[in-house]
Image (cartoon, rainbow, N blue to C red; front, side):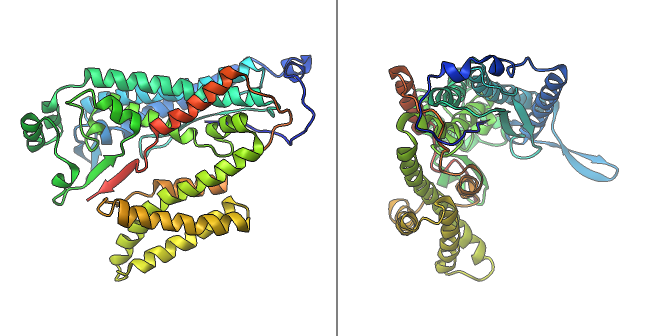
Length: 416
């Protein structure tokens, strides 16, 4: 992801070379200092260590319990740390190529830009990703488009390579027994040629389910022994490839300062982008509602509020606040999108997939708030409007198609 500032719109177009190639501008493009290189290197190392250790909870074979000063602590084994380091190497390869895609595109357009800031976080998968800081306003559509598109396209290619390598090198079904007793699962595969469906495994178990994406499912269909989505965490290449595809999709959402927002803005212009982004945000709240309503219902039932009406009431209030912020109090859009979002939530929950298990997932709820309150759905207009050439136009629509291939309606779910 990149932070790309823009400036107010002007109807006076100016050829790109007139604001890219001035001597004053060239002076801003400097080689990173030793101090800057040190800071970015330390952040990279800390992020690598964080991902390597934290990810052992996913890719490891089980933590050892050690007693330190009379207190029991879980510790990963050396084998687990090796698996975590492999996963970290793959994930950071994706993040690095993605961010340097932005970086080199910015340098090409002579835009002052920082090296990637890696963000370690000792929970989840060990990182919040990486970000570059663009230190000046981008004034033209072509520059904005190129810088926005370079990152996700480069990162997508790396993710695709990681995923394909993972499928070609994955071990046989018996590998799963290294992570506990999976013999029933293995016997079912050996007899029928496919793994047990998820509901057959529940029986009091807690399962962490990764959502299928169109591209992942398509590639997996060529490999009969591909693990089910509730077991891919044991395969570092597949897990890193899945995260790479999904993070690419998140960045390609057509909102505000996300990469997809820059790309769509370059393709259709300010006014059409605003309409598409508002409609798309309504669709995002549908996904959030599909998660939130069952989540609230399960939580409230534990406290004696078993009526589904309470969950719907809470979500309606939250949805109204989200729409109010996202649409900037535009009553026409709020009046149209709030009831439509609620109607579609009900359709998908009770008509389309009434038996779909939904517990423990609020990712799209978080993302809905993040878009409305941080990213914003409207893309600030650039000063100099430029027509994209056919090559950029094709690349832009390919990027939008990549988004469709990589997105999952239910990416991460904890099911019991």
